[in-house]
Image (cartoon, rainbow, N blue to C red; front, side, top):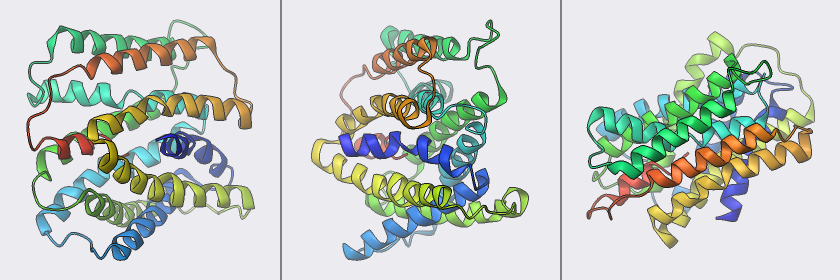
Length: 296
């Protein structure tokens, strides 16, 4: 769990470094292709293949739009003007968006007062981070892009949980299939925003390689193993460590300021997320849906 938190939490650091030589679309394409390559190799080593179910491919292609293409590009766009630590903190709002979407669509029932309080508290923490009432607040297009990326993740998780569960594919097959689909879809966006000259400096190239191979591919595989070992519910605990890792790495390696308001907002957001996790034990067959909320 510690390694997974380090890989995912450091993704925002690698994005920031990669932006010194690559455009947001180029970064998104590189990480999806490299990540997909890692998972396909792991599938073959395990004697499995990508899903052959056309319906699963169709569902995962749509999930890839909201779970990979849009957020990968938006986080890179956001980090052009926002610190990597802040991007990691805003990423932590994904469970809040997932619950809000579920309540609107009616897929989340019996939320209870505690979960609703958690939802309100989490978004209050987000407002504290943005601080639109302060001149030095983070109410900017970059921060908004990161927040929309987190919401896009939530859309993807909710969709996967409703459409792919029970079709016989393993979590690793689903992850690999989604990343392969995301690679093809991101390639279609390249003409619109990925044709800028690439600065062939070793730092952005190494950063995007680490982001793709480890922060995307290996992290997905570790998450799959973690779910096997401790279960989907306990595996989601890693989400509480990601913003802490992103903030500390940004401060240590990029010289980003540890803004007290942002740190306080992070604590409030995570407290809200913790409250939204208060729910009854899931019925049999639900773990695959919980799994979808952990694949990021």
